[in-house]
Image 1 (cartoon, helix red, strand yellow):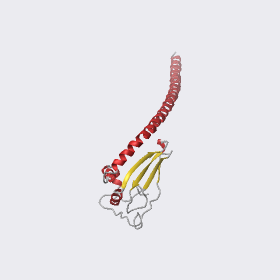
Image 2 (tube, rainbow, N blue to C red):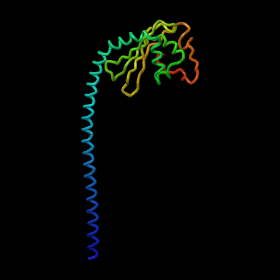
Image 3 (cartoon, rainbow, N blue to C red):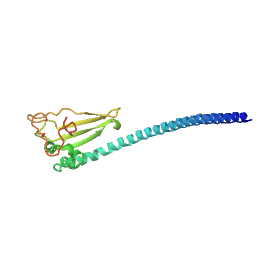
Image 4 (spheres, helix red, strand yellow):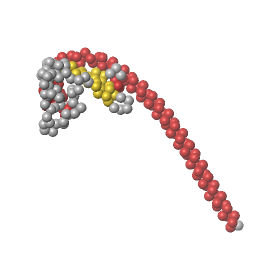
Length: 192
């Protein structure tokens, strides 16, 4: 009977392994189903979020129109404050880093600034700098446009500046590095 006992143990062990294997397959199947259900719910949530985002954009665009006359009124008052925009940029912790000593002189002629969203706010915006007549360039308006591309990058476009004779990046505007200022780079606010 000893031999029979060994056979029974082997059968019992094999049966346990099969149960474990079947249980494992069952758990894997349940896990896959749970993950699929989770993905369906996540997709539904993303649809709702997109719809909410579109509604928020509609409201934002509506209020941008309502804000426009108030911004215009504010800009008229700002024009009466000497060096307002230069002071504002120099007071900003990040923007002040972008201005060179020569930019300080140029920004004294900045009379107003407009930020305008694209029709589809998610695709970008533009910044228009309005300048009084100045000794540096012919332009009275400089616009930089920032377009958000699908791959997560930003395309920046701007017309070239019509520098007056002896001025400009290549000619007379002195951009020697003083102190700990950053060297001239593509990050300059108005340089195009």
